[in-house]
Length: 255
Image 1: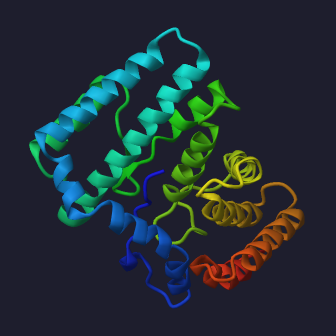
Image 2: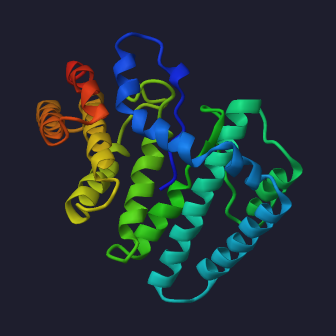
């Protein structure tokens, strides 16, 4: 997975400063992966040509009448590439308020032409994750070699694109979409415990459980108890994690 876009300026209250600590790892990964050299590379004609060539190859494989596993593999590859591109473009938007350079604009246009455009979020004012591609790949090949990547892409993409400043205040009212994401997170943790995203997946899934409890999805008491258990267990398993510093804030938010 690519890094998640997160800015310190989003955190305005003293309680939310703890959330900044919780997501500091995401900030660090963004800064490290999306440095100026990488951003400049994106806007060069050569880099845009490479992305367009890869997009054409993946799109052709997705349309071909090959085995579901082969098509799912192409979907995950395309989704991960789109994730990388949207992070770079979002960095441009955050820094300059617009996409920089003709090659970047050409890339956006060509992706649209091959039928796999970048997803624009009007509510967030930036590009979103290609979650539909990850979900379709997972539907095609539930137990495939890249199922863990599809699970992670679907989980994190939906989560980080669901709010602006506070992960407990989603842009849209939470509802039926929460349970499938919770199940995806729990499956990722259970079936792929050595995946590098395990810590983050556990934390995000626990937050989704809290949101489900607050939204009244299912039995509120059962949901709250499960969320509390997950947060407490996370704190025990990752006592030195920056994310653990935010757990008291989340526990106080339980209904």
